[in-house]
Amino acid sequence: MSTQHLGAGVQDLPVELVVFDWDGTLIDSTAALTDALCLAAQDLSLPVPSREKASHVIGMGLRDALDYAMPSLPPAQLPAFIERYRHHFLVRDALLQPFEGMVELLDDLDALGAPLAVATGKSRAGLDRALAQMGWRSLFIDTRCADEGLPKPDPWMLRDLCETCSVDPSRALMIGDTTHDLGMAAALGTRCVAVTYGAHPRDALAQWSPAAVVDTVAQLRAWLWPRLAAARHDLPAGWHWRSVCLSSELLEGGAGVRFDLRPASADSARPAGAQPAFVVRYQGQPRAYRNQCGHVSVELDWPAGRFFDDSGLYLVCATHGAMYRPADGSCAGGPCRGRGLSPLRTRESNGKVWVAFEIPAQ
Ligand code: FES
Image (cartoon, rainbow, N blue to C red; front, side, top):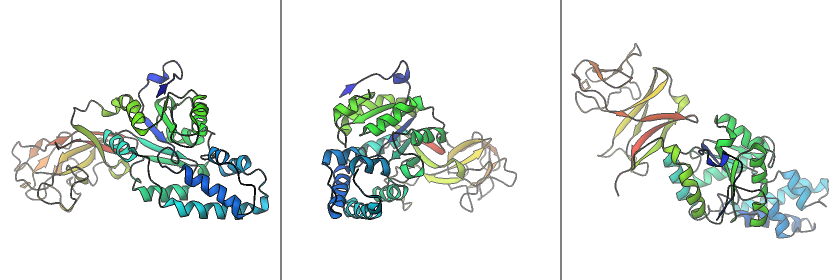
């Protein structure tokens, strides 16, 4: 693994948004994309590009890609070429897998509370299908596709993600396997990490002076981890952040969102051992508590999600009417008799509400 420096100061800034390329960076799809391009040319009896040429265009917009790899493609044959390309890619699409170690890395980044995004040369339809296949829809706070704006290396996708997530481009990180990814990042002054296990060779990637060039997902993890420490927001060891709802779901004094403090992998059928909790918005801030009355150990809300009284000033237990102050969960009257709610640590960023969870001992 080699590391090169960007510019004064930028290299040392904390990483506040991690933007991944898709094909060749998260997913091992370089061979499938290259095959599809070459086979489409073969089907139409057109000159078949070399595999090096075909793999070079991965991540580019369609027009640029075809200008480079298929310069002799007659415009009249473009629809037929696209149809054959899609056919050959879709045959392979369902079999595509993430690179070894990538599922675990993304899970760990998510548990850390690191905001993750995708900027890809895929179409929106293609990315949505791939996200569903991988079960990764909720993993990324936002995604951008080439057909929604301007393709790489134009910086549109990365700039738009940074603006939407309110992150300065100098505090974002682009991770990609092509010079198109690196060129996009360079145009915005965004750090990038080049991975060599995808489409483009190391020499071509290194010419863009990425912050690091890594050969494996394990090396990527090793580079990334210390730079994301700030995302922990001083959580003690053994704790992590988990997003429990979108910010837009919590209205001031409105319905609360219920969640379970058990790990996400636990059985969701609410067996013994369930640890119900909830979050509401009060004075602009998310406030989360264990859903357990100080009077008797029952959940507060009835119907589900109704925690505020009619005034919107107190949280109230539906069973016997114990009242709690939303700002700190302390008892404000009724049968709780000084026994308040147990508060949970929260934060809000990138359109999500996060709650600190303790990771259970194995
Ligand atoms: S159980 Fe909540 S007030 Fe009695």
